[in-house]
Length: 449
Image (cartoon, rainbow, N blue to C red; front, side, top):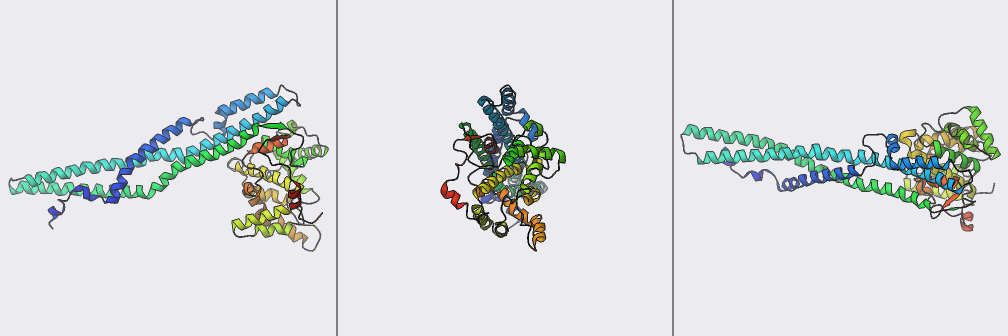
């Protein structure tokens, strides 16, 4: 077959059937990315490009929270209206923060990739497609002129050279265009995940809102059903107000005099929150001190070895199952206080991008205050050092990281639950009922103290 005849094939044969099918998806993909990006952008309630704090301040929900905060100050401390306004203020603040975080994730995970896809990546492929079509037409025209020529040999040779040059240009763009289409085909699943991410982000955001809005149905009660120790409850309450986004909480030390004063207030049962709300590190320090000064660790002496055996499981499912079994052995009061505290710590870790306190970091600084061995015996010093270092982290970290699995009675994603409990209110349908007799027996499998 001669060089010229080889190139007399139809140009549509330059692309395989698979690439022709892929080619038909490029323009619809660009349109979908462009439309979804535009619609999602119009749904944003905050300004793009801002960090979470700045977004939150500009949200209508945050403005509503501020108005509620200004309103409840005019009521006396015992007013039920004040209590509801105070709770709703906190809830609106939480919802505003959740919305700001959601929109930041949406912008980073969806809007930015969709914009790049619709405005840069796919238009480049479409430009090559247009160039491919133009050079195909040029080659057809050059070939037609050459085949129709009946002039001198020199003229025919010139036209033949034009055909060959047109073919070289067409072949070059064909290679580039084919590479673009192959690249699109390999990335199509990744592009599809941008749209999936929209739904998963919306679902996560909606689930948090559902959990919080459920707590609007309230009734006053004198018993939270949790039997939470006052120092733990008071400290968690104050930290929910001012500590969740405090960098290095539980890690950075506070003034010893302030911690001592707060501990005295906790011991007396009368704590003026306004006096300590400005120093979350002092509150965290008092909580750590209270836990460490207990005559027995919250996670008990008897279960000391059980915790480490459970945490030593290699497979995650097996580890969580073994941790659940150890949790069942805790006395009810220990279990309830540990659950309350761990759920708060899980909430704290959700703000790790701001407070730098990951589950691991929290476990390092707080773990030795939750679990330590008896001081008697020949191995006490070795055990104490071990419990204060790496091993205790392997126990506490998964408790925080998988709090929603290990403590199914509550949801660590919803800070409002802890806040309502600390205020002596009970959200209908959201908080677990008090332990029944059978559950108490189940949680009392450890030896009597």
